[in-house]
Image (cartoon, rainbow, N blue to C red; front, side):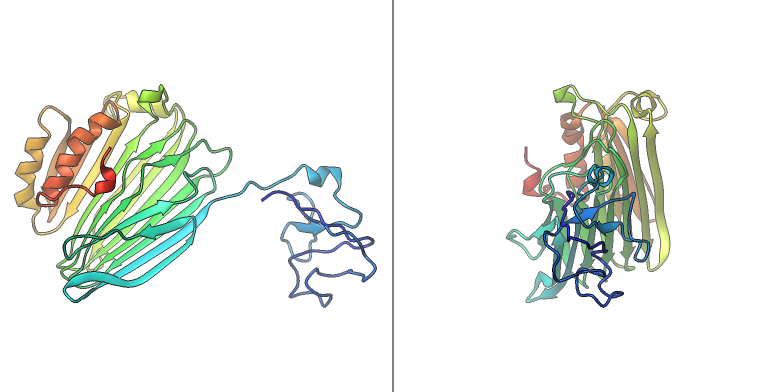
Length: 334
């Protein structure tokens, strides 16, 4: 938000303390004879009675305060709940706020496809996005993104993306966002929390690109944290923490990390088909940098590749195999 100055002659008051002061919406000290109005944002000087950092100075802005501005931050919250009605998955609740939008294209079966969109066009330090999905009993929801999410250089702060998913009895949710692209000096903390019913199925894919190889870009430094917590009937069945920080390019070059690859993905399936799916998934990984393991009714697949295109060539068949042959959402098409 840019500084907005509104000066009232002979008035100095706080613009956010209406509840505390009896002088109307512009705070205390307002005289009817005052002319010219200016609200100024300052992190240095503020009225101590309300501690908001918003000030009004009679006679206009001071030089010190005029040079202090607070960058705009993107915020968004999207929520989708679904139920079975008429033999199809239908909307029960839909909420969207700020930069978060959810679109529901037509499908030709009983499932629902949800495309989540960040209208800010990317994220940088201090941005906040929250998504929540609730799949009622017997529903089927595929959730994807309109495009790759871009995380730009952060001048200050860390972008945060949080996702909560609840999957009811006999329901299935496929969480299939397209790749996240981390630019140099990006800073991102991402959290995924999933609650599954005993009979629910869940598929999750998260792919990361450390820069755009075709553009000659790479993520040299920055921060990426990824936190997953998946529970079934309240019991933790999968947890992982990933952190790449500081000299990310040097870290990724280590053989024990990515071996110099800059594109990688984690795929997780939780459900009763984990053992039958395993052999098919492993056959798709032949000749690629990756592996798959199955235990406790889940499959975890790790993949790495030289660039995003090479990653997709193996990632898309793996996703399709874990969807019993169904293709990825159409928005994934290059």
